[in-house]
Image (cartoon, rainbow, N blue to C red; front, side, top):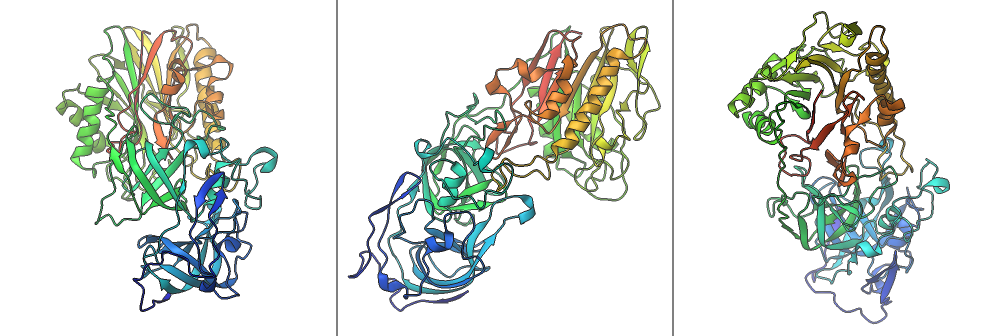
Length: 624
């Protein structure tokens, strides 16, 4: 970036000089935005206005062209990551579909300051954060800039105040407007769609006030707020993802332009409040979409969110739980083992059977051919004992090296832990990574040929994905089959905030195939030759999909299984928080033989900035 500054750079630019063109206000998406004046002499007659660069669609009509004489006031500076600064035309063109803000990419720490009036020359480009192949939207920007500072200390354009009352209720163009294709060429309609409104404000200064936090702060310096807390609220202050059509348009991500050394990013939980006013340019990134890049950041007000604990199981109740422990391996700090173990004992009330997902091998992410996880499980179960819990035993099957997906080298798998003082595991040898367990009738009951065993490990549905682990248990004389799952991730899906609407959920095909494979196994527990008694079957774990998904439908078709989450009030159904939406990824399903049960999702992680894992566990209690 080439930059020059006048000798009087500190002189405030408060009043328009004679001959200035003054526009008192512009309407942007139904919002009244006071604007400053820009002197008509600030740019030459060949100068290009910001609105001309932005255009009234998502792509600039001038993309690829070198433009000169672009004027504006600096409204934000980013000295890290994608380095550059934002400028805003304080006059504007009066068209609510054309943004008056623009990002200038410098590639190095910018030498301008907020309040500088600048004239910029550069090449117009469209930048896709994360790459165009991910399906996200682009950011219109100037690259290779030459910057002249005209004056400094100028009054900033008044930010657009975003409130729930001024946001459209529709999230994105859909149906005939988009039909699954790109929406980039569609004229922006900021009064109709939130994504259009945000695009029409791309690069402009916006502001939110006293916004409820619906997505906890992360190590990357981000949190999510909502401007419409009345949309699908959870009892603990979140916003629930209720269907593919319910994208909760009030959500907005907040990051900070303030260096962390100067002001650390605040820690916030769901249910907190981002109090006061937060102001800055509206940006877009691959992780969550439209983002308020705050030059002024509000203060977090503690909402008092507390971690939950479930009740202990009664003597005649069997408690079966599922918990994703997020790539647990011996290289993790002792604190992680201690926190997970304490949660098992204190928050989950020491369930009789615990299906754990994402247990890594003994060398963790080191790709050295190790597949055993005995050390990982020893450390975990010993931590449970140290926390005052039972001496769990475990059963699992080591995967083929590198065949089950997840973090490279980690060989994650599901494992069944059980309390031998309460429940017995029925060992039937012969199960391994590539051998399928079968349903065998014994005395009219559905049992396993191999226990522990895997479901159809050679089926293409499990390519580069975790194979379900099945264990046969006995509780008070009754046989119970537990299927622990960790279905394929959502990697490769187009984002809900992206340019393809509705987004393509390409990863769903594999999970539906996986669900059908599991359903086929459960069907055998009912229909296998010689089976005369209904089987007690529990299917649970991280299915990486929603209760309203085709994956869940494949498991519950024809009444084969019942989704226990449906026994809870709708607003309580969530185990994970992503992009500010509380949602279900982990599920528990039961066979018809289990008539009366109680499910509890124990919220201890997903809503909190300080997490032992990113998932909330769940506990099922029933009398076989």
